[in-house]
Image (cartoon, rainbow, N blue to C red; front, top):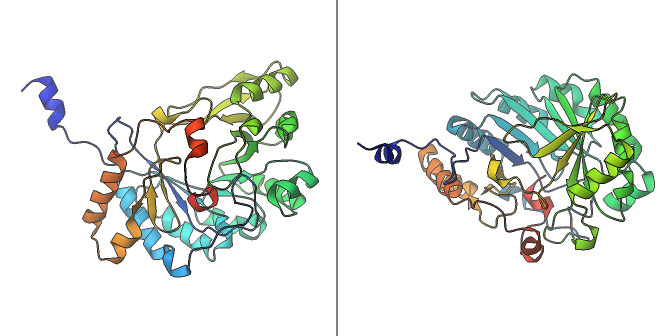
Length: 339
């Protein structure tokens, strides 16, 4: 048998698409509800929330997570909406962290409720936290989130840093004329804190009023920061990292840049998303979705669910359509997709 024929008959690893990307990272949106109303995430008029019976139950989430783990997922991140507004999330986290094959359990949160759950989340096995924080100024916080709460978020960030988690990161969506003048302030925020501040390019989603003039590309952010901190230098990033990371000598924290629009990292993507309604989304910006909830509730076996998952993953495109096309694409609001 020739080498080429042999390769054709070799089994393909589960969760591997036609471009050779193996998907080991599952993000699960627990709810579409949120206690903030961030302008880049939620439409001004809000969204009609899913009826309770349309969202995945914890039992369904655990079943699907166990299946994904058997297929090769090693990292699970809990998102929302705001995941901590859903009741009993620490109990779910404990169940997920015990699943064979799950090596890392993480959460993305806006931080407002963290003080109530830090001990129970850590005891449940959750080890990584990303906290969304787009400004260090109280008036801007209220303008961006349409709610007060900056002081509480910062206080909870500091509580988190002493709670034993393996890593804490801040997610900051950068928008021109809104908060782009705070880049150096955020860098200084990490001077005495063991934290990574991640600057995220503004992205177009349904109903978020995306404006190209508000878009700040990675190179512009980097130029601004290098002017303030000439000695900053890049670090070595792994093949599946979404962030380009840099450090500033003498600072405990480091900086990351999520360049989804100006320098996409689709070629190394290993992420898939399970949304609140049980739909599987293999690309953040892709329009295709597969309902695992409906299949489960119709009596699908794990083998049958695996076939649906495989069809979704093998249908993943090489890259997203690009910023210009995405701006006109009809897609879910970010609040419905999950952070």
